[in-house]
Length: 230
Ligand SMILES: Cc1ncc(C[n+]2csc(CCO)c2C)c(N)n1
Picture: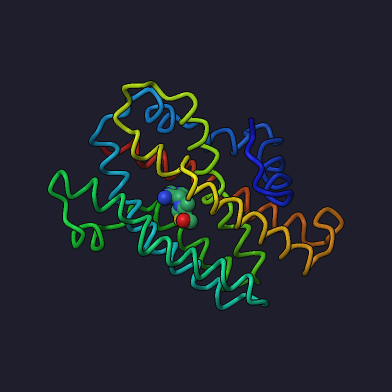
């Protein structure tokens, strides 16, 4: 079952599922994800992913901060500012805690060298926001937010009882994170209605879909990076 994170996400998700390479499927059913689900993902791969993901979150906090800059109304600003707070003050704590348990300090995390796949993704998102408007930025940010919500919910239902990755699964399937996905989805629907009216009928529909689909492909690359190194 696909979770309901609003009609804009539903539309973009369908657009990233219908092409023969179905990037949304590649992203949400990636071998890395299946390794989290059945517990077969090597711990070294997971740690390497977490180190990269910490740096990823630093840059995502910058991108969501750009969302504050590009907001047109207070409601948009509130959602973006709350997301920055969530990222900086909460979401990164999972990474810090897991890495601290194996002797990786927060300083090491913050100064980790970025893998090219990581760099490509975060800078693409930043550029979408710098070059475009609020919707360009949101189309590039949405796969990350909603994709992890969808993956988290599925893994919660399907994970092997003895997978060591329950902390990760619980973070993204939990009520708090699911609430963020619903709130961002609702804000996105209102932002689209306000600027474009109907998304389908807008001359910008294809360009926004292309941003969402490309960000989805960059998520696939990010999982691949996680599997590659360890
Ligand atoms: C590669 C990668 N993609 C998505 C997420 C999940 N995520 C990143 S920023 C953000 C915004 C809301 O908190 C969410 C959910 C991740 N951690 N790593």
